[in-house]
Length: 109
Length: 283
Length: 138
Image 1: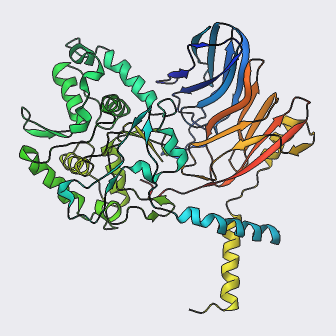
Image 2: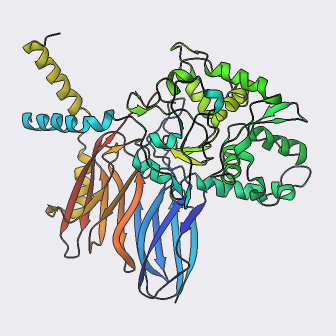
Image 3: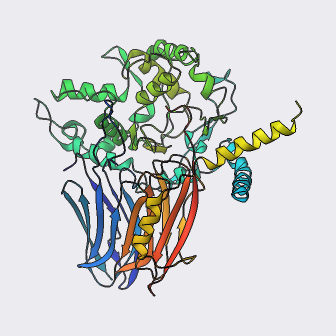
């Protein structure tokens, strides 16, 4: 696991059934592109988060394939439909095999 | 091809006014519903400076960069505030204490950022927040000090700064702090390096002008620590000073050195009256 | 000083060099598009791409894309060493076919968004983003 990786998620605590809500996510990660060189001239190996997914009660909201051109501390904003009460699960997949997760419970009514 | 090139030149000519427009804007900075003072009258000690008003570096940035600071979720500097909050609560050192053991919540340090650097009577010196944090760590916690401009220190400063957000900067420059302040003022107006530039050369005499493709601000530090898009991390005041002095092609003072402590007090005093904005977002 | 015809031509040539230089052609970008579309025709319009005209720093450039009814939107930075940026696959519970993120641009270049629409056709939007060079590098 890369050092100091910490997800932040902004999602509403409650929504009306069928409401479309805005979700924002941010995760601390250096997103080493594989294009940079260190002081002795050797290439710093690529080390990025390569995929981000958001699911609500097991159904996909968004699935992003991420490339090295995503900035350090990746940020996403998108919209989700909330059909019923449940859990929104956020997952980030690191090149090194680490998986970072966060879950937000959203009430309906 | 010829047509394309001409079109490209025409496009550049249209874009040119936007590129040369360097004056600070008149937007209002509201963060999470709280309006910041980003322009105000010169502090009394700056009467002789060739300026009309003091203003936050926020005004010199593009709309996109400005927007990043107006919402705490969009501000990537806040990730580090979260990390510092973890450190605030974790016990370190031989005394078995955390920051929270003595200070409880970080909100107990509201107002601190606004008045630092500040004279410390017991220590007999002007201290920055970073010095105070390390004094706590070594003397009260029995822990290792943070490196002066490390990521951890910048994060802890951001957490402490956030408690004073919106309060006017109000550092004392008289009494026992006067000597340090005068030393800082002298450094501010001294030309350094092969390029023979003082802080004032850029940030007093030329703010609002372009330096290559970038706007020169007044070099205010009310927004520090600041998340820079350039290096995608929180930057400390002394780290920024070092970068500036290096770019004059001079040997720089070190972060935490008495010279930079004095300069921080002086530069902070040039922003007396602006809101504490940190952690801010700059380019 | 008076500009002679020769001076003017020289200035013009310089301007051409300056304006053309930042635009690097990257065949990998075209390949990525072909892979995404399977070689199908790509129509202009039907997808929105928001990006600043001038980015203050190429390291963090806010962009957003949307295309009503799209199942996926791919974003490419045609002038980057590797043009791929991200592919947004919208799921059943997507509230809209919209996403916003922050990207790295190695220099002034075209950013391209290609959407796979509900009917299986492809649509494209292109936006040129100028990346400014910082002040003194501090």
